[in-house]
Length: 374
Image (cartoon, rainbow, N blue to C red; front, side):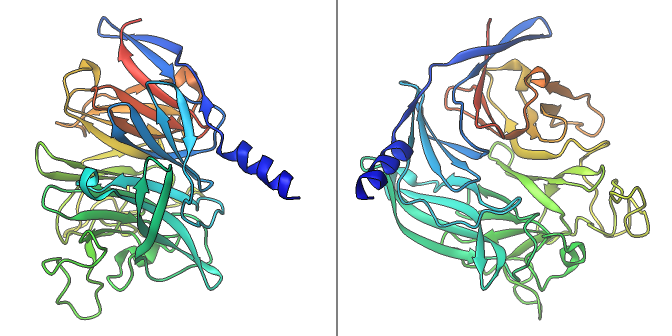
């Protein structure tokens, strides 16, 4: 039995090697682009982050954390990941590096956590020892309140601003009315200190009955979050119901309307609530999608390496299986580019590398790299 256990452990932790393979070529505005496949054979790759110019750390929904070495093509599974609850949309979700990761080795993740038979969105952090390929000192630094029997609409994405704060999204968990309640974390963008505590200047810290961590509310299922350092603006992207996916510019203390206003409809085809798309005192999205694209990870591309993406929102699209690209300026009326459609992939996350190239992950365990040329 011990010998079998050793063999299984060896198989699980053995590195996987794969050479980049060009899988798609396309042309936009006279420029050729190539899409390379960097990984294969894994589960849903929910989130990615660059550890260095040649290493990507990424999560699988199933609970594993891997590091892909771009220089060698080797993918290694890290030891001692967090203990997550995997069910339906729940599991291991986002991953992000502390802005001073090179000094403190802190890695942050969000995941579905089971508490007394129910689930919630958790934010945890741990130290990453690259030499030993393992994590240590896992700490749950924030748990969304309350817990639920449902296993969907967890959110959740992490973004750091340039002032030492962490932003975190939490979905409505299928209890849409709670998005309007300041007594719950559901359907909210939260602003936290690096240790998970609430900053003293958050908008509702002095309001009786309100949770101190809330930064904005009235969101449905936010699976995209990006702090644009070039402008100091925080953008959030969320799933609508049937239609009504949104990109929002997030402002302190504002109400983004769900479920009081939406451009989507119930899955039955009927209106959501009173069927309103606007109401005084409620924020409008800067972009909404009809029909739904089911948006996931969000990037604002500010580099110059790839002209196709420059100054544009780049995001995954799950339902329509593409990479969605639209101008940041005038995005409400600008035309979209819908890329990678021939791959027939649910694109889950998208990031920019230190090389200025765009990397996208899929629900079939692949990471793709987009570059100029053919």
